[in-house]
Image 1 (spheres, helix red, strand yellow):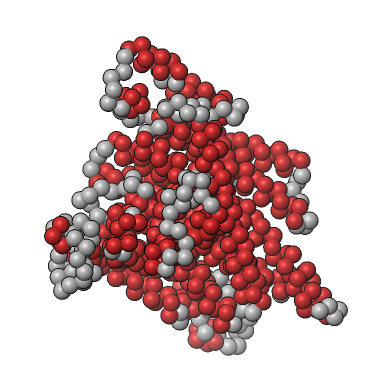
Image 2: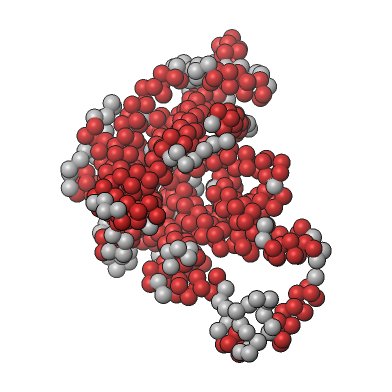
Length: 324
Length: 309
């Protein structure tokens, strides 16, 4: 198969007769080389490059990733070094946002909370993406009863609201005990397992559209198997809309982890996460005396979620020819 | 239409069975301590009391038998008793008005701000108003409720005490305004974007050009031809949103201490009262499914071009 493809590719480059009825006449063979037709992806990228908001979002995303990888680069403090003598102390040289009710350094805690929040969000999105591609590709490609079964499963999972079902499920994990490693794994399985449906529907509809294209029929006539057609010819078409949905889902998962930790079913100290910090700082009595421990992790969380949602939104705008 | 209705109902029953089964399985599967000892607290439970409670809650029966009992009770509207002996239906009914009021305020906020802003932005595409609301809605969509609720409380109940910070039980409408706005903000943003896109699309439609070219005044073109067609997706969005708001209010109800369905669920999860949790979640899922069904049917009423065969 690959022989065939390379041959046609080289043939096209050397001979350049163009497909039958193509606009370039044989008299002017050079025009085609200079104005190389751009692919939809290249078009979208050209559009994306000129959007400042996209770059702001990318910068925030990279910053957060750096914090995730090496938190000690951003603070020399220890998130667990708390001393009640510092209770609610104001900002100082040692702690730029001051201390919380327990006398912990607010800024250092938020920095060290990044890793767990991001890891849960990232791996949940990875897991959800894997499920979505597997389900969407199979149901869209094979159709028939396979499609019916998978679509009904999607309906059922979609009938379970993320926070509601996540709360019940994480509560089970909480009651079972277990360390924070197990809790992170549980978060990934639960959030990914509940949040893959929208992406699966997107993949399925792109697969159905691509399946009916002529080049798929051509590939099949040339003897390509199902696996090859799925991976080489159909999946690339579904990739752009899929990436948009999964980027936005990444933001949603980070927010969902925070919401569930806020409701008290997430990670337990000494593990840190933004949701847990917001939860600890949000009782109204504490907010009245010192709102900073609430504001700092909230800002971290909101900016991160916002960055991923903006990224997804801008990529979608770039890929949508109607909005261009 | 009838065939579609039947098919849609069958689908709903399947989804209902699936979701309730998952919730039931997760709440009951695996060990969760001893529910009877949980109920009694520190007090010792005598053997006869234990036997009686086991009998009453079918604790000795197999998993599928218990699921069957639960399903039968749910369909007949009998949600059973909590582990503390209170009727679950009454518990939910007591908590329901607060959540319903909260959802009403959220939906009103959505309609008043979201749809209005969306119509203006859609008519004046590319204007300053359009661009600034687009960025603003993006920011709102990006900020999770878990941030929005405590910060809203901090700003408008502590720093500038316009609204009360927490609600009494039962809450008054005034106490629910701030939480309602917080809850509704997310839908405001989505509704605004949806309205804007659909108004902009309809403005370019052939029937609008026809109406304009036969000399119809602009106000009538917008008010009758554009709006009526643009509102179809909005109505469906609000319907679905109403269903999910019921369950989505857990965080808002926690922060503002509102004795609604979300708070009931939260409280009983922490108490380990599985019957109440399952009953509440089942009711919420049913509300969500029914809202979706009604929306699907409304589609056909609002838009005569849609025919279900």
